[in-house]
Length: 201
Length: 201
Image 1 (tube, helix red, strand yellow):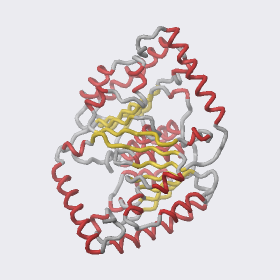
Image 2 (cartoon, each protein chain N blue to C red):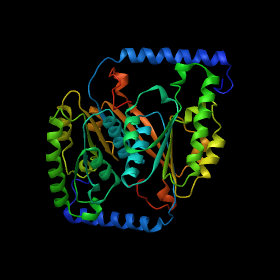
Image 3 (cartoon, one colour):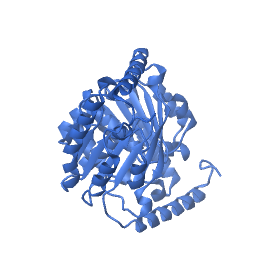
Image 4 (tube, helix red, strand yellow):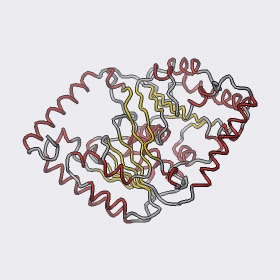
């Protein structure tokens, strides 16, 4: 039966059943610990989602950090808002790999930013740490996924980590607590609409 | 050939080709206008993504508004940060439908918040307006999807709209410029991890 055609009483019964199920699930979920959230896929919204979750955490008075790979040369709207909100922000800072065209330089830049990121994952003062667009680093062999996973798994128990990137990396799929695939169904860019401030960067 | 085993020269050539393709695509994208972004699916990250894009827009000095359906009874981290950043925020305010169990009351609440949302879509001062979790309203027949699409399509030319919700609504798929499906691959909640402040709400 369609949701729209059910009677008031049927609607009420259905909602009561849903409420019961939701409450049972909440009662079952007893563990209090930080999680690893992994957002991958070719669709728009992965980094935005990580930043939105960060914003929500800041709203609860939590402390956060963002480590961005690849997009360093862009002057982003993120950067301005992170500064305003007191978020620790590390950027790889060499721009897109197709702009540098220099593998050795890219690797050195990746290792440099990663070495500054590691202490964040050892500091319980940080409630949430984001590794944005890191999957390119694994795809191109700039960083070791095993090393990164080891650091993620050894982080403080209550710390949350969000990992984003286009690629589905098996090792990350293995260790993440919550995983969403963001799949592109349509993108305005492919219909001739210019990338715009605030929406794309 | 694997990305990791290619020579320096091969890597450089591949990056040059990618750079050429990206530049050609940017040159083709000439239209400057606001877009409708639609994020649907059963995965975590849709609302967060909308809020992250909003945060990025605010970082560029843009003006934004958020209209939230369903989640009104939760005291969210979003609300605190929206207030801090000067975002106009409307909430339906009746809680989850399985909590109210009263169809008439839900419809009245949906219509009330929608009537306050319409003027935002007629005001060019707003650069970005989010309709968060609105697809439930269509699924349950609380709001007319045709009416909402009409208002979205008639908005100021440079205004961006982001629509989120679990369901793939055909009318929204039809009119959206950019569409991502957020698919749940795994969720910590199903493994007994409690919903936590800043991450889930």
